[in-house]
Image 1 (cartoon, rainbow, N blue to C red):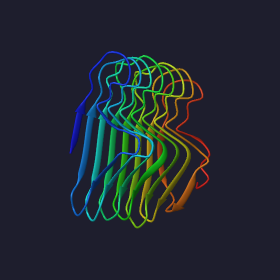
Image 2: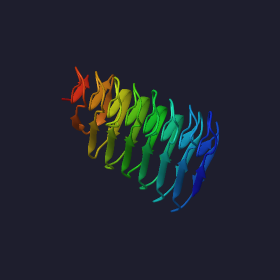
Image 3: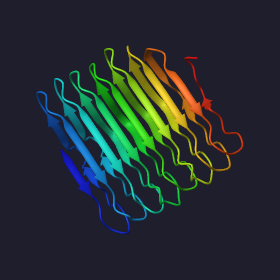
Image 4: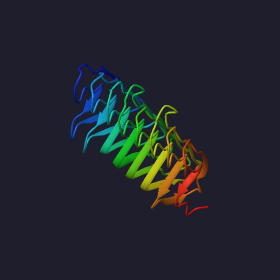
Length: 239
């Protein structure tokens, strides 16, 4: 297991950071657990960040668990951030990612779990991604995925669950935001999202340019406050 706590008052006070190209691997039935809590700086204080080209991999029945909490005070303070990186279980192991954006932030992009590029995959294990967005004004989402893949190639379930913080005050504080994401599983795919507070477009779930392989997702969205907020917004081609 890897556990870290950030310290500092300005930038990049990560709890745990896997640098570019870094690999964490467990063979056999061993599990990998990563837990991080950021420092209380202003910007870019993530609980856990997995940088470009990095990976976490387990074999056989080994599982991956990532938990991150941000304590940043302004903007871009994410619970867990995966950037062009991969979490991969090559056997039956489950993968779970839990992230909490900063509840004391005042700006933007204080996301619970952010996945940009790369993805999360298991051969037959379940995959869970759960995020609680932080406070602030704009785009403080529970779960945000862009240009990413989530795949369980056999019958493992995929669950994406995101809640935007009720304490947000502006716009686009969405529970689950998915843009150009591929979801693939022969098992159950579930997506649930709850929008946050604010004035406008605080959707429960927002999707666009999705690719779905295997099971048809089951969705459950609850809109947040504000005008033009919807339970489920965007393009739902599988409905």
